[in-house]
Length: 307
Ligand SMILES: [Zn+2]
Image (cartoon, rainbow, N blue to C red; front, side, top):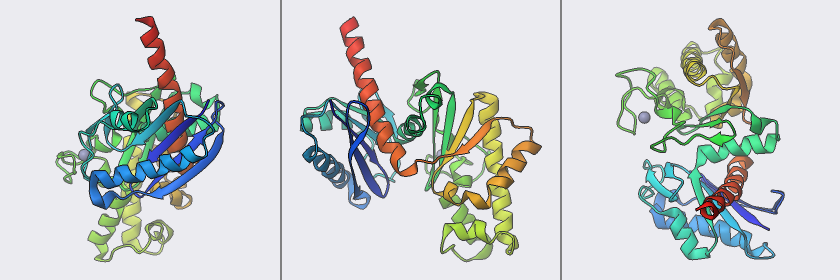
């Protein structure tokens, strides 16, 4: 038995072919043609799948896909997407792939896939713990995993921590609200804040953290970041009280410069939730998509047999 997991990212689409034990047989990475709209993104997706099919000894049993946007997992439709993936909103991705490949397909939100992938790659103990993930990248993604399941919610938006309001009446967000988390602690937001204060864009995002002790304005931005991040962690701890919060995304790659500051602030605020960095960034999304493909496919079949 074989399966395929695909992670459609803003810059690259990554895929893995796995066997029945979820062991990797082959991995591919192709650029995501986000600037040319829906057809081009679908082109990147099929390029990745076609490359994996060439290495697959027989027809795969499932395809799992992690995609940006709010996804109705039962129909595999993108119910809401921002312009990060132009033309993506409204797309029936599951149907499109099943029509094209005649393979059972599961489509889920990319942050959900990344969280499951992190837990799966860490091991079975991790899959038993209630965990929330925040990804601090271009935007802020999030996912909630409780009692062995991704919590998706009644409107496919559970875990969208990037669009929880952090500063009421604050910065406008591309979702239409004011003051969302994403507008303060994403990599994009940090770059914008630096440019506001210094009139100079950052050449490299890591410079902000690396030079915080020699540049007072950078120090201010980092302090604001740590304060805002500790507030959202506090809110998650109080509302869901998970065993652990995993922080991932590009901003976390320069964590050596700011992680101790965050831990200090959490201690001052008496926030006890265990915090760890994501460690499988490049592989988590595609392995998580394969995991979801394998599990939800079986679940769907069980439900079908029960009726
Ligand atoms: Zn928002």
